Length: 346
Ligand SMILES: [Fe+2]
Image (cartoon, rainbow, N blue to C red):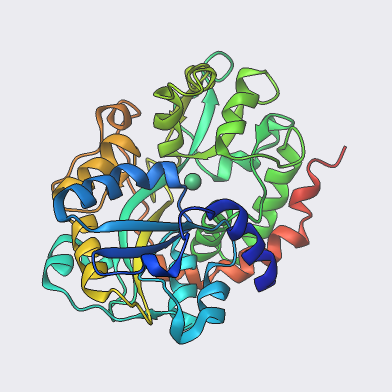
């Protein structure tokens, strides 16, 4: 997408946050985030409380890398927060990150959740699970492969096939099964869709409540966010209509992806950026990620929330994240090739 398109989005979304360059002073850290402001606010509030360092958040829904590239050496970006291994590797490959070698962070984050050169770090994981109608689905276990079984014709809802959450899952299928098998599978899944892919993961639970479909693909943490949503209590009903099935629990495990962080290449507040990165990898922040965002913390020994535990125990697919990132492009091409976003044939 163009930089100007991204910049326009930024102007409308962040007016007041990045109000003036005079505000760039010691005691601040600037965060460029693909993560929704609501989700990271409790973490940043805790960081400010502990350190006195103010956080400025620039939320983008696209074009984060292009934005930092366009800003060049004068970029105010200190820390990049994002979801999805592909976006983290994309930031590294685009040259907008710099390596971090930090004892605290490396002690907290297991090696398989971070770039060997320190250009990005995973902070949490999330499973891409099946939301199933409590009323209409008797099965209590399922595989991703079974989603292509004609018995589910007209019964499945998902968001856009090109969304990074689906691309991550489809890329993992390619890594496990090869491209030809995955194309067959994706065609089967497309033919089982109840309607054209649309909305976010939570909307699929809403569609299950409405009786539009029986199964959906969704991330684990959205279930916790819906169950506890006081601002939009109708979401509690969406969550109450579904049960969480962990696909492939009996064989290779459930596909997981990460959210993570990176140090921006020209970070003007590098000391504060490193303090924030250390903070996010340590116990207090990992607990907030678990209890308030309903993700799985990466810190060894940190527990998921009771809400998330109530879904059952996840057995994560051990496929290296690099294999998912490596198959992303092929997955995206397959989504177009099978016409996934056109929805069911008839
Ligand atoms: Fe999300």
